[in-house]
Length: 96
Image 1 (cartoon, rainbow, N blue to C red):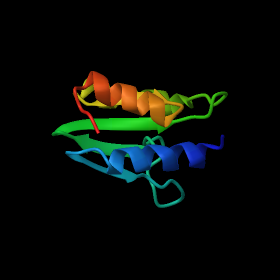
Image 2: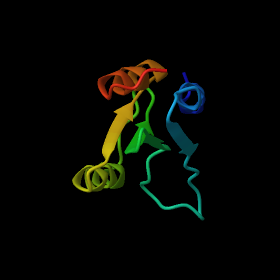
Image 3: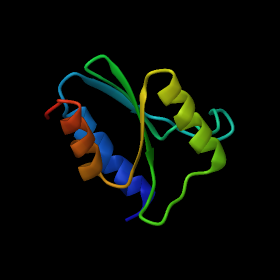
Image 4: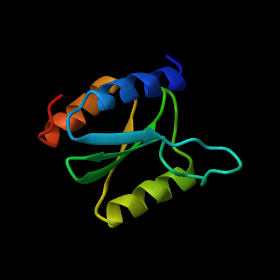
């Protein structure tokens, strides 16, 4: 499955999740490099999802950025499917 398809499935899941506000971060020349693909506020908690395919690997900048989010008290996750996101939400006590 292509990364864009995984992102789309995750966005559908998050948009159906009560208490969740989320958006897809768009890269490119006007974006900030290293920012995770999906940013969400779930029941008042900051959560960032870096989406990768089964074979995808984080860049060094992505690793650093996820670390900074965690250091600031947010949750930062590398995910490869909407099912993984659903499991994370479940661990957070959020049900959709």
